[in-house]
Amino acid sequence: MLRLERYIRPYWGYILLTMVIKLLGSVMELLIPYLMEIMLDVKVPQGNLPHIWLYGLMMLLAAAGCLGFNVLANRMSAKSSGKITLALRHDLFRKLQSLSARQMDHLTVPSAESRLTSDTYNVNQLLARLQRLGIRAPILLLGGVAMMMSMDPALSLVLLALLPIIALVVYFVTKTSVPLYTRQQTVLDKVVRTVQENITGIRVIKALSKTEYEKQRFHTVNQELTQVDMRSGIVTGITNPVSTLVLNLGLTLVVVIGAWRVNSGAVRSGVIVAFLQYFTMILNAMLGVTRIFVMWSKGEASAKRVADVLEYPEDLAVEEARARDAEEDAPHIEFRDVSFSYTGVGKNIENLSFSLKRGQTLGILGPTGSGKSTILNLLLRLYDPDSGAVYIDGQDARTIPYEQLRKKFGTVFQNDFLAEGTVGGNIRFFRELEDADLLRAAADAQAEFLADKGGLDAPVQVRGNNLSGGQKQRLLIARALAGNPEILILDDASSALDYETDARLRRALREHYRDTTTVLVAQRISSLRHADLILVLDDGKVIGAGNHGELMETCPAYRELAQIQMGDGKEVG
Ligand code: ATP
Ligand code: MG
Image 1 (tube, rainbow, N blue to C red):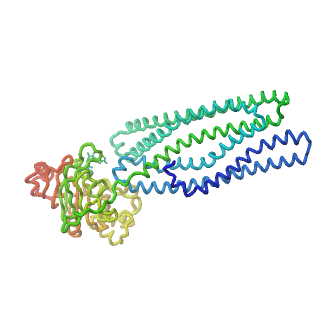
Image 2 (image 1 turned 90 degrees about the horizontal axis):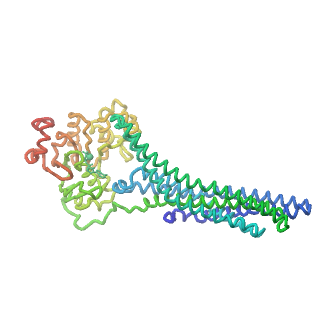
Image 3 (image 1 turned 90 degrees about the vertical axis):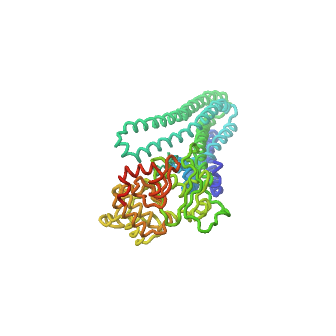
């Protein structure tokens, strides 16, 4: 909680006021049995009717005050904790946006989701309840004990004898439930992750008849969650029966010993009635304290999870430009001896060097998992290289401010996504672009199918489910082209286009985007044979580099592929 102190600080005054009001309410609550004792033991025997009325009225006022103050304080606590949580969630969301891809890999999306939802909720609950119970329970507990002591110290010993039992229970519950709650949250992450994967991949799962396997997988995590839930339920569930037992035991003892003492004239009978009330009050306050401990552990675990993310270091900080960066006529894009690994185990890219002039095209070819998308991730600075550097216009990408860097690119990721909405909205994608830009981009992306669908206003369903694979790709390409990017990145973006459309797309790129440097990843040699430079990758290493002609001479893997795909390697263009 302490790590979130700066969110609470602005509300300290308000929280303090809430607690004072709560305090007043609790004092009123404490007064009621006391007033009743005086009425029963002093006023009733005197037969003083006006005084009896007066005390009755005072009890009524105390009850009303207790109710009023409590309601007011509870509302106030809901307000302050709500506002604190709002700020917390806002900042957490912002922070999640700014995390590097590597940090997100580490955190995982489901965990980010549950931190943003259930963890901030737990913090909210802790803050709200702490303001309510945090003051009321101790006041009732200590005040109740003090009142009892002042009325009859001997009879109070009954309570004192029972206190250690309750203290033990509180200790046990807190000690066991803290680790359980942390674990509960972790397991919950796992359940969310499993469900998410399942829903995202529902088609594939059905197509491959993996439903049974998925059910089993869900069953396993579900079981795990249930077990943790049950264990924490059992632990916290012990408190109630034990305290009820102690309460009833105490009440019985008070009545038995009290009767005996009243008989011998040591105390007045009203004291016994007041004692019964205080005793119940104190026990409930005890339970309240237990609940605070449990809530605290839960909220603390959640606060820690939230703070952990908030305190993530700025992974991809923009660095100071170094002297050597200012180079005249530097290549547009240059990789200089770049090596990179996602996990630190093995290398996903090894000693990669190449350079491209403005307007040139780079083609990347290689089997699946060879590192093609990784090169693009490095170029986009979603990840930083472990060694070596990526230069854009001769400037180390690490020294270019994000806004500037991101604006240079138009990107179609592999398995890119379309948002629910319209075609126009998907191409524009929250940028300030004219309709004319969108239409031009759509035309260049060969998205002529749009005319039949209703142009820019045509609806797009969630994930573009109402479009075919090829239509989706064209829409995504249009999105990348609409901003007139300096650098166009197409990761396997034309795989669902027929040869002819693919060729027309390339022609449009050549004619209308002369100054755009293009990086394209493709499986088909025909898609990139016109590139100025083609890199053939295998397992993170370049096994061939050059243009089509050169590679046909020097790279056996490339030649083989060309022969398989294009017969003699000359047709289709
Ligand atoms: P494909 O043709 O299937 O798209 P690719 O050449 O684009 O393949 P990459 O996505 O670059 O392949 O992946 C290269 C290697 O890096 C693979 O072995 C993959 O398992 C690994 N990899 C990719 N992304 C991550 C990640 N986020 N965390 C860890 N490893 C990753
Ligand atoms: Mg890829």
